[in-house]
Image (cartoon, rainbow, N blue to C red; front, side):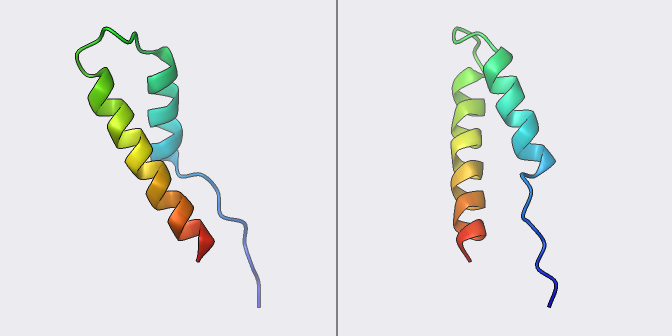
Amino acid sequence: MIVKKKELPIYLQQLDALNRRMYHEHPMWSIIEDSLYKSKAGYKSEKML
């Protein structure tokens, strides 16, 4: 059986980059941060399987 490494999805990479570049005073910052943390949690739980 071939086992491939699980790579970080592009969507998570994009959210992470956006979160690093955005000012904390931006109105969408909290929404993006919440989305990033939820997506990372889902990715980590999927990776554990």
